Length: 480
Image 1 (cartoon, rainbow, N blue to C red):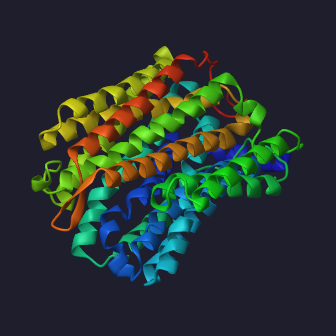
Image 2 (spheres, one colour):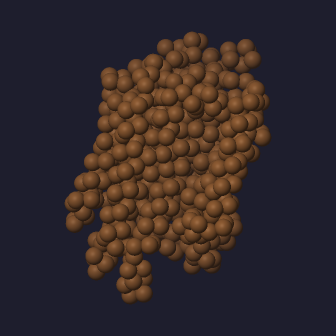
Image 3 (tube, rainbow, N blue to C red):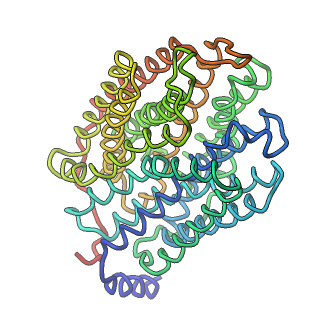
């Protein structure tokens, strides 16, 4: 153990530019977030492309969200135990394999398997944040974490126009070859520029805990993501919901009693961590609400009374600036975190989210109203996503950073999955038929915006209860 740590310290001390390490980790984060919007331009055409029913093709999106939610906290724990860099490499390798499988497949089964493997790469974002805690001094950590957190929105926002362009002008398999290429680049860069870990938390993997978490989350998230389609009170839906909750309760009881739990729930129950994680559901809901509603509003025909009649590529370019805003304000987020602390930064970000949806609720008669609202959402998400990992890292031991940030990412995933299901259900229920096609009404979008406002207000209120946290501690053996 001592020899391994000595080798890691020597490698770290030879790292010529830790800024380059941060840039590589941010690139890996962009690759991960791009996977969520990779197939968005293809959703309407998937039944034809894959010769499958629309119900079956929804799994192309659902499976990625599901695997991401399950794999992220587990990969965080594995990173704490065996090395964050090592687990990042494994996740990027899974992205490459999954992308190749999907690219070579012409059937829905192969694409779903590939998309499942792609979903696991989401874990590189909290792992990358944990690496930054290990290698960076306090005065640089906030800005780096803000940049890494921004990739969760930037990758999707920047990737959507590119995915739309390829979907229009090239074979759909090219999307997956692009994903494989990005994974290869990320893998090589991580090997070259991300140092081995110094701080490890040796132990054994809680296999039973991992299985229990996977089963419980699967039931809960399937109900959330597919409940509108199956029926919220259907026997299948209720069985998944109740079964998932019961399994998670038993899992929690087991985690509190085992000597080496997958997740230390006592740490997760600390007020700062608990309130931050619950608020993360609201932030995930608010972020994905705009991803569901804004593209549809922009692309629906003008005759519907609720759309602007824009083509897919133009709509993607209007959505894209939100991601650019998140990237641009990351230095400001880091400065504010150092100056006023992460909790006020979270509160301001949540307030910006509420303001953005109030704005679009009142003004949405022109396409540029959507642009302005989405840019404000970019500010809010940029601030809140930068603040959450800093609050977590100020509240947990350094050797639990990966697992704790993974758990926070899980709560955000619950929010995004919930938004996808709820918004989809509202838009489907409040539709009118135009030329044989069901089109959401303007009132349906207003209801969606009100729901996003409520989610933002809940997160805003919860942020006020987050106690003040100490400064982030770093491993004493690390160079300054």
